[in-house]
Image 1: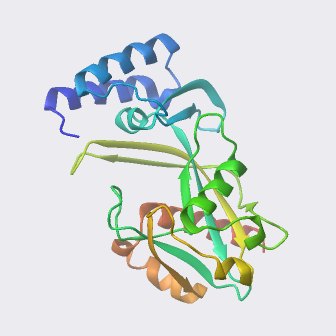
Image 2: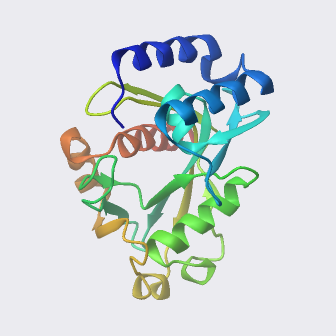
Length: 232
């Protein structure tokens, strides 16, 4: 998305004024959305993906906005991450497809995705596993997906190669694969190029090469490590 400097400055002002959506009214949101749809030639389309706007503590504001608009103005939204292990305690990482717009070709958690408006954390986690890896409930041990700690924040502001404001409330879920789950892996939606199975020692070595890892993986493993240390 090519933006003029005047557009960029206007968006920076909105970002500061709204503070992730904490200081946003329904009227302000609708007026701004109408303005930027016209300015950027982004008309509403059937099935447009919308995200709930939330406070830092994960409490909903009662508002939702298109995903592209959240990433343009820094509106805070929810993203779920799933970290899977084999019965032998090896971690499963995905290698993001080189066609992905964000962080192509980098290693990431097993699966991840934005929560659509009205969607629960567990619903989103199960959906992302099925869509990205073909894994359903039968591919996991009976414990299923369990949360690792509570919600945590991630925030990024990029100016190049595109103007991108990313303010997320994240939750990390853990699950253990069964042999059936491993045998049924598929990359149906094209978002994953490959998987890497590795012991914790190899994963820790990979994290020392941040240029090979997505920002999400780096942040998730910080959270996972802290939670593991607190539980022992």
